[in-house]
Image (cartoon, rainbow over all chains, first blue to last red; front, top):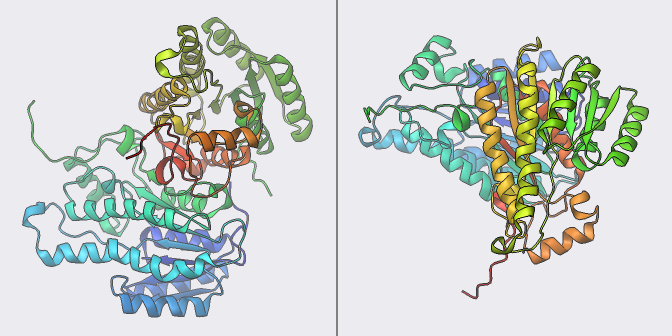
Length: 271
Length: 270
């Protein structure tokens, strides 16, 4: 539906771009004409992905290694990004980590708590902060830029297998609303909430993901596992002019789990 | 260039004579769909059908039907399957707003009946008449897609149109229930428009401005909505891009409901 080159002449910056959804976004935006800056902490994989995307799409693809939880690294990354691209029309704030699978919230180490908040929540804030001021001044009409954050269904309904992750993702959904207000009407800001998709969080293995879903008694109305492409499809819509009158919204892409299915739970109850 | 992802597919649009329905008609036909347009306003319906057919070259069949009347809906559904060999998109869109500005404690019973029957029961009747056949269609991976028109008034109550708000909150619940029972074959989602220039505001921006002022509305994206804004979302929901999304209500309102200020008529000095 949106195969036109609507991102021709536009720059897109994607964090967490070496793999998973980020890599999917990279191919999708480049195919639609965008030049890219890909940001990740995993240098080797990042360079490999950047090269592949460049080869397959013929676009400019610049890899920048950066830990998004460190403000000095984010500052220098954003400086370099604006040197490489003359605009950033799409900011895809996607980098995130999940640690401590299955550990009770009250038993989690402080250092792990800090780490997840720093990467998932503060990281997205730092990147928005350093990019959006310039993005807002860009002369594209009618919208100067578009910001897309990766939240999660765990931020909509708590997932006690990943309690800290859930907290960070709920924070992202609220941050998206705050940013949507503060950047309106020049920039639209929306979130995507994936459900269960085969990505690096599950070692790229469907069987590990299935185990997680079984343990949590998850029920998916659409009765299949999610793919990276499912999420990419929504990001393409959000990057396109089709979504220009939508801001501050969180888009679940989970086959219906959160709103009409059964989300993960681990409590035992006979009544 | 428009990609014809609806080639060989049928789309049924209720409230198809004007507003969002008419916008959807052009958009779906341009993407290759043959259409049945349903409306209660015969004259406008026939005019719209002719215009869409002429402009797009697709088959466009008008059927006059009051969606609140089950006999008429049954007859309409029968006729639809004579005209189209499939209904891949069902856009359940017909709706009315009455009793603008009347307090909920003073509204006449007949207006309650009229609004609930058209907005809520009407969508249920139409979904009921089509869902079994839609579910049995052979399209892969999804056999059909339903889209319901709700409203931001169904997300956050609008005291200016209380019955309308209730009916639209009901539409959101109806959408969720349908999405459960029709999964995994059919995706069912709703769209919640904000303030757009359509027949409900007599196609007048001025009327919308009065509404915005009396309801103290603030729109983050700082403009009045158009039919086009809504049609763009409909294209996404009719396309394969949304195949893994069901049961969701999509606000299309420039941010009013979730990050702006929705209508309020509250008097308070504190």
